[in-house]
Length: 391
Ligand SMILES: Nc1ncnc2c1ncn2[C@@H]1O[C@H](COP(=O)(O)OP(=O)(O)OP(=O)(O)O)[C@@H](O)[C@H]1O
Ligand SMILES: CC(=O)N[C@H]1[C@@H]2OC[C@@H](O2)[C@@H](O)[C@@H]1O[C@H](C)C(=O)O
Image 1 (cartoon, rainbow, N blue to C red):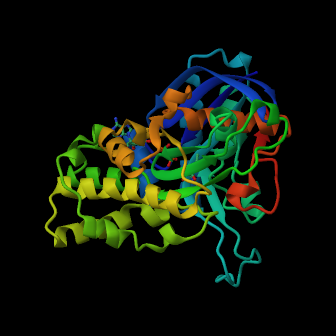
Image 2: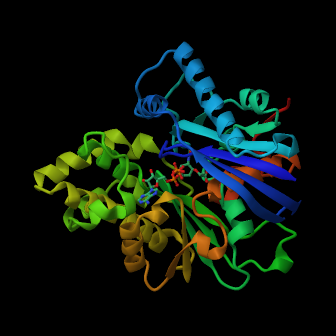
């Protein structure tokens, strides 16, 4: 069947849309990318979303308006693919995360809530409106069922990574570097074993990916730039080892998986603290960007050394960070002796892998195949992910 996957990630840079042909059943699926595009948010909507992610208060009426503005942009992103939507069976839409609270260990602090320690995650862009605007049944709200089972609700892409990127003979790690970084550990998985769910797959958020870097670039360029293209600015600086070490004392890095995070920990407010510390050490803007880039690279390395069952032979990088040449160079250095490649080199688009994944998660929901992996999210059980809005 033809399906469309839509996502705007924690970078809030725009909506990735992928039209795919999916065949097969369960975990034995084949996915072909037919068309893909990135549909940027209008600048005003992007800055509003970033402000909301940074805890700017909003009324319920404003929330409703924002939700529908996001859904409208998502529908337009699907239409921008210029595909014949009558031939598309479903859209799998992740939406825009504006709030993510992982499950809390220990006693619930809010005595008003009966839901002890459960996580909560809010993605804007309601599927019902996307379905009405595009005429395609739309699966959305993928994270909530896993959260209700005590899971992190994230990352959700690892089982799709397992299907698309596992090697039959050796272990791999797939590292996504979007706004936040997340890893999927992929044990060797032979074609002949694929009738059953993948065994031993792990995955968690490793910490900041590009979110802090993007904040810093925007701040240092007084809003003229939104990201460090190819890492060219950072490459002109020298990183501060002492600051990287100080930042690595953040408790998130030593927390045992399953774990997930977001802009709540590694957003604008944390960026401002880091910049104040960098200024106290008289770091130049380029040194500061090099130091943030190093934090991303070292936090990934440490995460592997602390928590992976074994250090992988091969690491595949996906997401926008794979296009940052300076970051890729630092990762190659830090992840030795592993071979560091991009997912493109394994046949899957690094820019559109997550959009493809939400088409697959939609396909699994459509065919009643559980989409979460408790070994990744920590949920009590497998469950169907997503709610279907029909037209
Ligand atoms: N040529 C490039 N050079 C450097 N960085 C780049 C380049 N292209 C993209 N990026 C970075 O990648 C980011 C977007 O990455 P991506 O689209 O994977 O993030 P996302 O999907 O929003 O995040 P997440 O995976 O956390 O949900 C941009 O904000 C930018 O920082
Ligand atoms: C709550 C949320 O939106 N989390 C994102 C975020 O961006 C990267 C990382 O943190 C990952 O855990 C997740 O996204 C991908 C698509 C996932 O669920 O696999």
